[in-house]
Length: 236
Image (cartoon, rainbow, N blue to C red; front, top):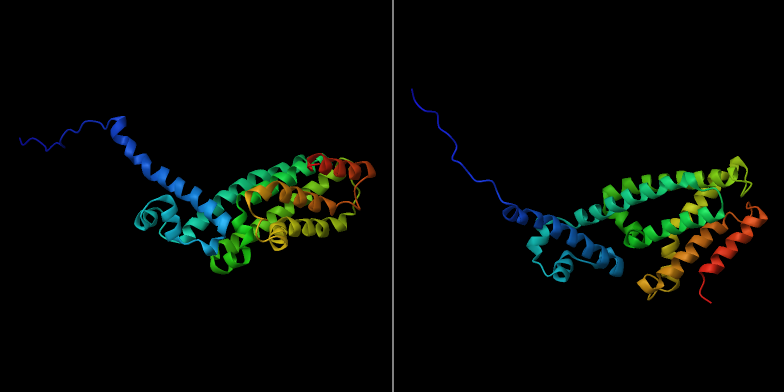
C-alpha cells in the first residue's frame, strides 16, 4: 500500500524570527502620529502625502503600502477621535455641579485640541470626504445629547433652574460654541492661535464661554463659583 505524502517538517518560528511581523504595525502607528502633528500644525489641505513621507524619512511607496490614499489617513485619525469622544461623553451623566461641568467641558476642549485639524478645516473636510460628512452629524448629535445630560444633572443637583422647553435650545448653543470655538480663536489670531503654546489659554476661554451660556440659569453661588474656577486657572 502506498504511503501517503506528508508535508515536510518545518521548525516552529522562533520569537526572534516572528519579530519583523510587528514592524508594519509600528510603521502604521508612526505614520498616523506624524500625520496628526502635520495636519494640526499646517492644516490638512496644506499637507501632502509627499510631505508626510519626507517628514517620516520613508518612501512615498512605503506610505502608500500602509495608507493607499490620503482619505484613509484622515479616516483613521477621525476613528480615533470618535472613539475617544464617545468614551468622554459617557461622563456627562456624572455632572452635578459647576465644578463637574467645568472639568467635563475642559476635557472636551482638550480632546478637540488634540484633533484640532478636524475643526480647523471642518467645512473643507466634509465637502471632500463622504464618511466624515455622515459621521460628523452623529458627532454633533452625541454632543448635543451629552450636553443635555449635563443640564439635566445640574438641575437635579440644584445648581441651576431652567425650563424644560429651554434645554434643547441652550444645549444647541453650547454645542455650536464647542464646535467652532477654535475657528473663532484662529480668526482672532491666525499666526498664533493654534500653536501649542496658545493651547492653555484657548481651552480656558472656550470652556468658560460655553459655560457662560448657563449663567442666566445658574444659582448665584454656582455662578460665582464658575468665575472663581476661571480665576484660579488664569495666570496672574
